[in-house]
Image 1 (cartoon, rainbow, N blue to C red):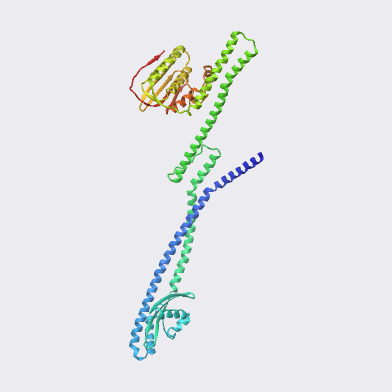
Image 2: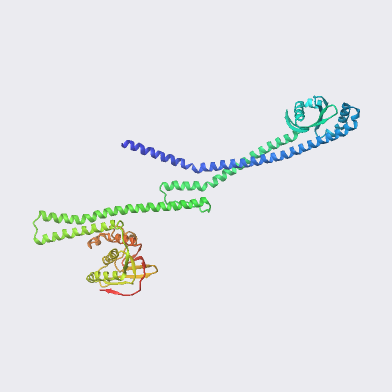
Length: 513
């Protein structure tokens, strides 16, 4: 079983290390993704724009050539009809041949060639050129299409390594039908398009090479803060909790760095809080064990004496007294612990509590105690109403005043002041003494259970270190706050602030001597 657990732990460790190793490459992978995506986007944008530009320019030139070819075809038809009509009386074949010879120079220019073919495939003109260029098949297809569809048409064909535009119009003679056609070579504009496309490819390749380098550098520059954040996170994970990101930019990465720092602060704060809670629990356990050990040792020791030795009546009474007093101490300790644990669980019903009633109760109860110890005490609670539980509030004030009494040394200069004041929406109770005071580094811990500033003196006076923990819990249940200000050798000021409803103000100083 141990071997299996060890192997499992080792596999989990390797898995974590594997995840950590893969996590180290994350910023680089992100930079590569950014580089590839930007490069692909740039390529698509420039390729699409270039293809559209080349296609648009080529379409414009091709339309211009087609328009020019149609115009040449119309001129050819017009010249043929004019010449044929003037020589028609000389015979059909003679008129056609003579007309074609007379207009050939005017029609065949700018790379255009005319041809005339009869419906049965006999050529009047242009056969030699068509046979040389091997264009006769395309002319036959065009004439066949015109014989069944319309009286005029054109087409563009790639033949061999060249591009040609064929136009043809139907002309009905007296005894025959002929096709007046022209062939216009368009190879030049297609070759120009191919040259432009080749140059554009080279330009696009150069642009992408230069742009790719710039994008690669830019991608690594943009992801630099992320890599820095990753390194800081790794060091924090290794225990360098004080490290923080110094990125102060106002963009999303800067905001991420700020949130990361805030998260790290919260985590460190939570860790410190957990460490403090663990220490408090450890101190609580140790103190609780010690508090039980002292009275139990006394009880067991005196009980053993009564059981094993012959004691005088006076010694027996002394033993009984110690057993009884230590038992009462354990009983008091158990009651306080029960109060501390169960206070949050029991529902409280708050009702209006008069501060004057609290004042009268405190005055009646503590006057004998203060008089016996030679303490000058003064109670001044301004008339008001506090929402709360009167028994818990009295317990709170008794504990605070009892702690103040324990902090005083006997003497004529010892005094305690309890003063209550109505504030705006709050009621403040202030307890002041001129006792020994509390060290500054221990003020934050005196509300912990079993924590005592002077342990030997507190135990001598019957304290167990639970009173301030109870006070803190009572204040919290009443929605109040506790503030402690103390200086060694000068005294302590404790302020308790409650949400309150101020009643009719009535000042009344009660001096307890």
